[in-house]
Length: 135
Image (cartoon, rainbow, N blue to C red; front, side, top):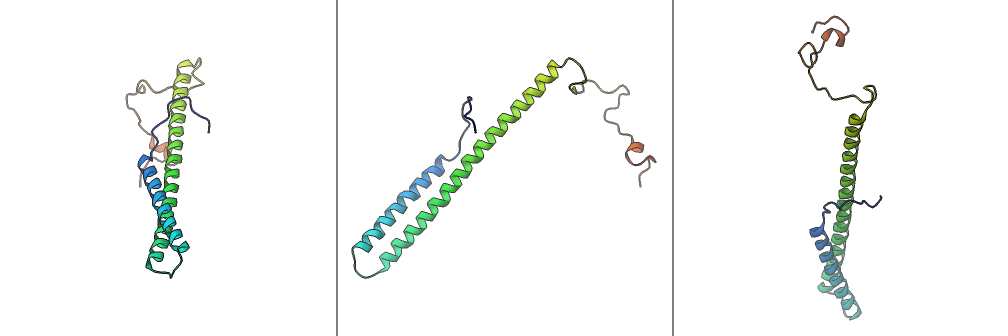
């Protein structure tokens, strides 16, 4: 995607980024604690199980939150690009309608009601095969 020359839109995720970093710090702490227990030797105890469970859990939480943050940022970029495209399309259509030399190029917006004075009146006989009756 090209880098826009307009100011960047609001990008969500400041709070999510905090929680991803927090989960990373906790995961690092649990992994270091588990490494310290393993290298210290001795019998496997409940502290080993707690450190291993904490390390795995906080690592998975960090990965899930990081993936969510990435998806949010990508969705915000896509949304901003879609808004830019819609503005460009509407502006181009407006400019084309104002610059049209002949009426055949652009369909103008209706400015006045039809000659008979009844806007939007439909003819049922043309819609349902010619009889005009409803059953």
